[in-house]
Amino acid sequence: MKPLLVTGSTGFIGAHLCRALAARGERVRAFHRPTSPPDLLDGLPVEHATGDLTDLESLRTAVQGARVVFHAAAQLGSRGDPRRLQEVTAGGARLLFQAAREARVERAVLTSSVAALGVPAPAGALPMNETHTWNYPPRRWLYGYAKYRAELEAQEAIARGLEVVIVNPSVVVGAGDLNRVSGEALLRVARRRLPVTVSGGLNAVHIQDVVDGHLAAWERGRAGERYILGGENMTHRQFLSLAAEVAGVPLPWLHLPAWLVRMLVVPAAIAGRVVSLPIGADAFHRAGMYFHYDCSKARRELGLSPPRSIRQAIRESLNWYRQRGLLAV
Image 1 (cartoon, rainbow, N blue to C red):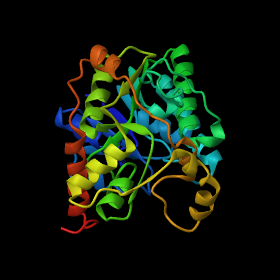
Image 2: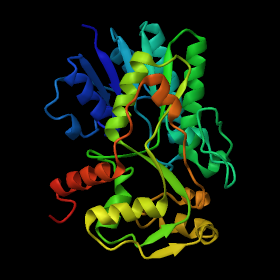
Image 3: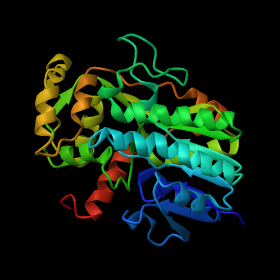
Image 4: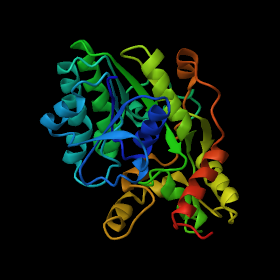
């Protein structure tokens, strides 16, 4: 049986994907950096392949003999060296797709993000869908721009003969968020260290719905197409209030207007150099925006079930952190 390669296999989405594929009896090859903690892969019957997205030879070794590639690896967030972010996320996608073409891989599934779609139109517009394109200054959202560029690399690979399907998860919630992508805000609420909400909104999705979407994209997705993998559209206040309710702590009591938050970009950038913030300073630019999405295309074309509840996802996330000693019992 030819293996299925999963990059970013020690991360939140990648590890869950490895687990789901292994449960289906697939032969899984888990690609990750030598220094990546393998905690989320403990006990899974996977082959380990170590390397780096910026090292073409290690990618060639990893894809050798693979039937399908799930590319879930990327540089997280917008902090750190912006050149490294682009090199890993966009440049790494280009090198991986090159290696996949050379190895005659049947199909690749790129884990992009709704961030690659850019920012929403002014208030009152319809939720964004897969036709929305990048429309924001790159320096104000380095992560989103890197994901957008990775999608351009996917389209270039398609033009060169590789089948690539793109999936765009929204804010992913659930057990196993080791790097605290969505979990940082949940932990801060549960610890009563995030009493503030800001106007604006997001779409949150259960990790298992994201995994199901990846598998469906592999089996039924159309090459070259994007599929938004989302769950519930809600305001930031609704999301954080739900987290507080699940955690059994007081709801965030202070609401800041978006204009005030946007004025705090520079102070936040300075503060972020010495203390850990729940979000990057560049996110302050996007205060007041409603990142709501129409997920009907993925459900229609991929045959996905109705999304699981975000309350359930938050509960599972907080329980997982509690089991790891990050929350009081």
